[in-house]
Image (cartoon, rainbow, N blue to C red):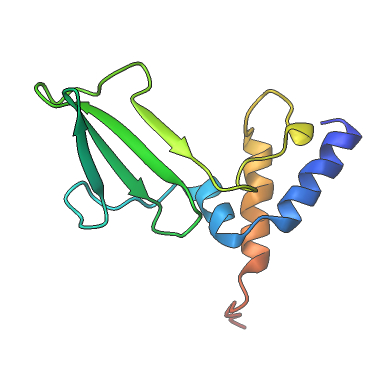
Length: 121
């Protein structure tokens, strides 16, 4: 990472909501398909399943299923719609996605935010 990228990354990391960070590290917690919170509708033979992340990060995941076969439909089988601030800003990106080192930094930030550590002597 270049110095400007590192500065942008650290600024984002310090300002990202904890719920967003939990999802960046541990993936979204989605309701099951039959859960009452899952919205479903059919358009032209495709069943759309819309599920909001239970961690309240603001992400909605839409899955497209062929109504006849049950196969995932279309090229975009699943789409994620994110709240502002969830994604790493463009100026912090390296083009390599989240490397294991970046994920480690996210994990350490989450650990730092945990307030109720029990220390055994």
